[in-house]
Length: 173
Length: 447
Image (cartoon, rainbow over all chains, first blue to last red; front, side):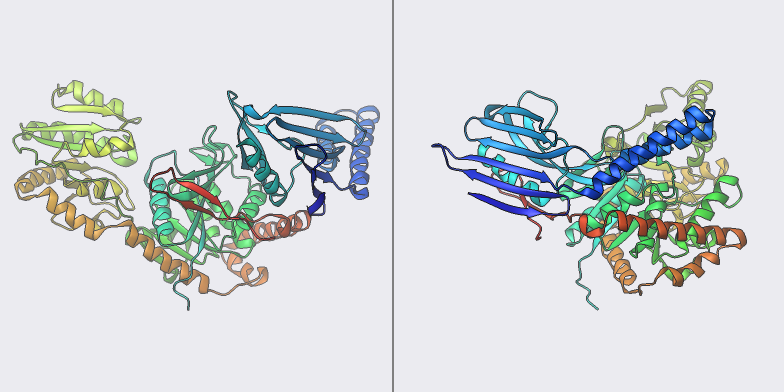
């Protein structure tokens, strides 16, 4: 049984509750919508940066203004850069653990497993950066100083994080 | 006119907990009392060390420690437009209706008020100190203040002297300035249960030992008083650059057994220092409103102070003896205070202070100012620009240009990250159970 719950222009959330085996496995997915504009802008930024660097380094002499130009083009490329992540998912195996997966467009998958006994509590944090403020979902682990982020690369909106947080709370008690 | 309307207030200043000072405690107590009246208060300040991010203090007061490094005297670096994105994010996600800035010396306050005004919010400014007119630093500070107050909804000053000073410095019309004095937490500052004996009179001094607070006057006054009155001894709490001079004075006149130097006194121990004495001595050279003498009076001490700034407005005549900032006059005043001492009853003084000053009263008066501010009409950029252009021949044009660039940057930011994409924060409701720890109930926002 699958329920597509929420989506915005960038992310879409999906909750799969498969009842194949004797125990129900919970899967929560946050998928990044493929946007041609973003990919184009990412390549455009990289192209601008590379041409500017090539032009200024090879054809002209390196001086303060050219270094400044390179830095500006680099920051433009960084801002426009499109992360190659297809989706991040949380697989909750009740009474066993939680598996956090990151799927890339190239087909590569990175998985991390956290045993259920290690999770003290899942928390929703407000993170403040010098320019903005966003929500993140993290796990407080026993005997560890650092929180483990559930969605390491993506920053989904909080209304997509709340059902995942509730499911994790239910699983870890 | 809906007088019962609840506001959502953002307090902005560079100065907040974990620092302890006049401005910090003013913001804290005012926020707590406004929370009790039912309003929502959020505080924005810069990060202190690794204390950065969102923190909650007593009663669910939310504090944003924005990770901008303090650069000079606890102030964040003034980048003009650097704080626009984070200020906008906080204003939208907390659904703020009024922005209240504190202290003219705080760069974060001026920047946040400028951004809030560009985005159309109503702004209030509270000035806590007196400033001069003559030296270079003051001239620049006054120009910045003139910019901020050119388009302010209302301003608050802590004494009538401070109102005069602010109006002269910034050119704002006096009708827009309200006077709301500070208050003191009389529950925390209560007198000693048993009256101290008057055989040996103890004079307490608790202040930062800097030039502004009159440490040089102390150096002249203390030996003279010790010579004239053999049964008097001093307790000096606080630290600063002038402490060396006080130590030298102690050595020179051999007053080690009569003058005790405590060093820096943590805020939580100020009361225990105060109740060990009979008289409180304040030798400041300038003071908009002195909370220290309120604390001393609340603890039942008789105050001797210099007649500067807003000090004469603070206490009734039978609780304070005023003197000119001159050593001879101050010694005379201390003599007068020593004679008045047998007639002083600390507990009666404390009860009078409870009636005269309370933070709840300050919060109610501030609420009136907020209601007044919200009634003023909304104006767009073109209607507001003439107020900036009036600030001066060159300054006016510069200010106008700064506001136009701010407006354009704001529009650009609205295109890049629309306000709808900033999620609003649900209000946390603190639920207290009798037998359990206080729980937090997460109230979900509606889509």
